[in-house]
Amino acid sequence: MGRSHCKETAHRAGQDVGRSCILVSIGGKNVMLDCGMHMGFNDDRRFPDFSYITRNGRLTDFLDCVIISHFHLDHCGALPYFSEMVGYDGPIYMTHPTQAICPILLEDYRKIAVDKKGEANFFTSQMIKDCMKKVVAVHLHQTVQVDDELEIKAYYAGHVLGAAMFQIKVGSESVVYTGDYNMTPDRHLGAAWIDKCRPNLLITESTYATTIRDSKRCRERDFLKKVHETVERGGKVLIPVFALGRAQELCILLETFWERVNLKAPIYFSTGLTEKANHYYKLFITWTNQKIRKTFVQRNMFEFKHIKAFDRAFADNPGPMVVFATPGMLHAGQSLQIFRKWAGNEKNMVIMPGYCVQGTVGHKILSGQRKLEMEGRQVLEVKMQVEYMSFSAHADAKGIMQLVGQAEPESVLLVHGEAKKMEFLKQKIEQEFRVNCYMPANGETVTLPTSPSIPVGISLGLLKREMAQGLLPSAKKPRLLHGTLIMKDSSFQLVSSEQALKELGLAEHQLRFTCRVHLHDSRKEQETAARVYSHLKSVLKDHCVQHLPDGSVTVESILIQAAAHSEDPGTKVLLVSWTYQDEELGSYLTSLLKKGLPQAPS
Image 1 (tube, helix red, strand yellow):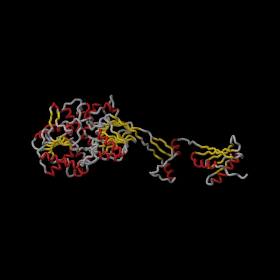
Image 2 (cartoon, rainbow, N blue to C red):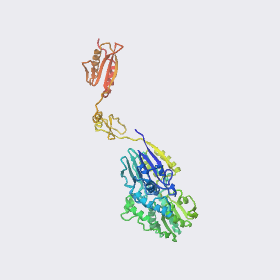
Image 3 (cartoon, rainbow, N blue to C red):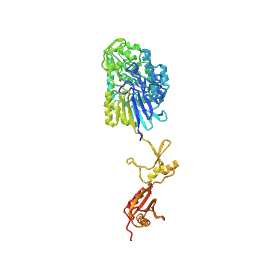
Image 4 (cartoon, helix red, strand yellow):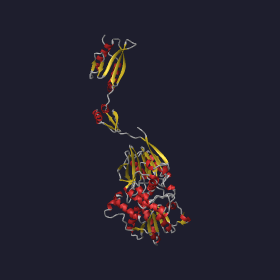
């Protein structure tokens, strides 16, 4: 079998949760998986370094397609920069919900960066629109032909609305890229699922590689208790979230709790985005879980009674309140403004419900920093309580192992995680599944050899002939088939040699084997031949034995001739020749004659 290879470059996702952008070369095709930006940087480290692909010319010539797994900015934030500013005109694949939500988050982010912070060298609103024109939306489990050889297929990933895992296939080689996924269903989304597709390589995120998270119910109880206690003592609770995903999950949780305990403190949500978000949840209701789909007929779970739109002025209102504000890592925007206002009061609390990238305010306060240097050299003292509760929709170590078990890959590659944690998971995967596991650093390339299997069709005639021999094929005992391998229209066929000659218009060659047998016999050659004839006639009663006029003897297609020995007159040489088909009979006759002839009466 030929050996080909699959090359994978973790090109800003290796041992880093900052952003994802991975290059895969498979069967001569180049695919970019995700095109994210880093929230912790404001300089050129924010976007992936595309000069790695090519330093001159447009990227279209080097990439066959781009796949975006879901709408989070660390997976799609660099897309307009990549397609409009660096230059890429090929297809960009994503699911329908991702296609709808992605431009909203990109525009929202652009507003913060350009309009509020006045940053230069950033994409414009028009670029976002032009970039989205290159998008091809895909359905789950739909096989999409990118070109004659490259095909992709999306699977449900949970995590956030519209998140998908992608299978990329070229010929008999395949790679599965998980993006971010969640193996446990939650209040509004189902669990990730993939069939036993046995890819050559599974590329999986490993954000929570070492954590086996405690039960969700305990975390939710904890969360409600902390919110309740803060509100009861007249404090304000800030929950920084990204507009879609965990936000809806926690809103459903608080809404039901407020209803049950009959609390009066107001709950607010950053305006604008929520209405849009909930609009998309209604639109893509099929992407949510069974329970929501069932209750949707009576009422929409996303139309909240207790949760109102937030106005900037409300932040200064006295008394308790709960506010969901974007973005989730406190690196900019409304959540950061509210945090600055409330940070000085120990009655208040900020609950960080997800992962925070290094460099963000969220990461700093979670690391225990209580004095923060803000813009304009002013120092903000943090007196409010800081809590971290993982409501993150990533798979934990158990979930990652589950997925590897489901897909049964030949090799696993870990990305989107931290080196130390990945090492632990790598060992676990290698021990349990006995497959190679890789964890490349940013910019590092991993090359994997693959052994492509080549399918061969078998002609009906040949199969019938085999079956006629009465041997039924069994899965445990592979059978050897004899036939001629011909290649037609770039596919292989195993056929009988007669059919092959007919199809290829060739004449058959006869191949004969000749063996010499020495006999002690001083009589003439004709007499020796006559003795051979009568001996074989008496031994081989079931075969047609003939003595021909020229003195030679035949048994079926086997020819026996007697000749004189060049040096010893008392020895005769028998030449036994047969065709390939009569191999067995030929061998039998040779061994029979080697034993000699019965003594003739003198």
